[in-house]
Each structure stands twice: as C-alpha cells, then as structure tokens.
Length: 275
Ligand SMILES: O=C(O)CCC(=O)C(=O)O
Image (cartoon, rainbow, N blue to C red):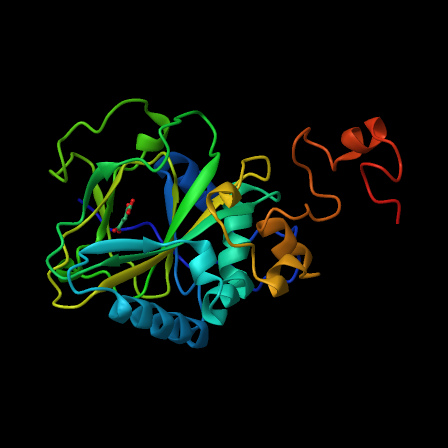
C-alpha cells in the first residue's frame, strides 16, 4: 500500500485556458485515475461548510448511520454555493476533465461513528478509454486511520470487471489516500474505491462535487426544487457552465467545436439568441 500522489496546483488561476496542472500530473491522473489537490478550498469557505454540514448532521436522527444530502438541499445554504467560487478546485477540475467541464451533482456524505463504511465499487459502471466523469472527495476532517480513509485501486478505471475482492477486503496495489481537510481527491468515476470504517468517535463528513463533460446530463431531473435564483440567474460564465446553463463562449463541446456547427444549422431568433 502507498500514499496518494498529490501535489499542489501550480500557480493562481489567472487565465481560464491556462493549464494549472503539469503534463506529468495529468499523465499520472490518466494512468492512476486519481489526483489529490491540496488546499482546494480556502480556510474561510471550509469553516463555513464545516459549520453547515455539522448543523445538518446534528439535526439528523441519532439512529441514522449514513446519509447523503443532494445539491438542491445544499445550495439553499450559501456556504455550499460558495464552493463554486473555489478557484483552485474549479481550475483543477477543468484541467483534468476538459474546458467544457460541468458540475453534474454535489453531495454531502455523513458517516456516523462505527459505521462500516463502503466496500469496493465504481461510481459509474461505464469503463472506457477516456474520462467521462470525475467524482471528487473533499473531506471535512483529516483522513487518518481512525476516520476510515478513502482507498483507491490505481489503474482500475481503465479495466472492465467487478472488484477482485469482496466488500472492503484488501486488494493488491491499493492506495490509502490520507487527504487533509479541504484537499480535493479527484477520481475517475469508474475507479474502484472504498471508504473505511469510522472509528473516530465523531461524524465523518465529506462533500462530493461530481464533474463531467458538458454533454453528460446533469441530475436535474431528480430534483423537485429549482436552483436558487442567484445561481439560476448568475452572469458568471464559469458558474453558468458548471450548472449546465451555458457553455462559456468559444469552449468546444459536442462536436469538438465552439457550437458553430449547431448555430449554422439553426434559424436566427428561434433556436439561438441573436444578440
Ligand atoms: O466514504 C468515502 O470516502 C467514499 C464514499 C463513497 O465512495 C460513496 O459513498 O460512494
């Protein structure tokens, strides 16, 4: 077993097109299927998220061992909306997934003390030779052995088939990811991974922004509540793209171009804006 392959994002995000990860880091993500970005969320945002998450957990019945809150529950709270302003997080997601990156979902996971955790699994069963979507664990406490750290099987995102072991049994080549609170563990959603048993005596909380290509369907259909108005009507181009409202101008997606092909087939004023 080893430890994670993380290292810091290189430099501030001053240009949307500028790569923020080195080619070596991108190659490691392609080979291993995961990448740890240290300090993805600043301390102020992380503190606010921890407070809101702890409040949600405190309100939940003590009998609940494990539960997830989805994006519409979370986006009612400013602290979670502010995650979309975490520039290092968004820049790394863009570098790993592509310029047409979208936020497919956002979940908060609560794992109570003495919960068994979750055995080896993939978040999507669709294994192929490209990364279609990336789940991201942002843990709200340091992942020490008593908290039940995340375990991953490097390279498994490119290999079809069921986990070669039952439950959470150890696997040859597995890596334990000792991420710190506020780091982001990006992993190809087809990567085999497992979450350990929580023996810390405290709630184990983690946020999972789930990224994908722009042409992958967001999980909007599952929600009965719309996005909050400030997100739905935001003029921030990157937020609009993350939320599936508009691609940023000039960003290539469906046809590998900037939507020029679709526009050339349309009719002005009917199926695209004229302004
Ligand atoms: O608990 C973790 O660290 C991972 C959680 C997970 O993989 C899941 O809930 O699907």
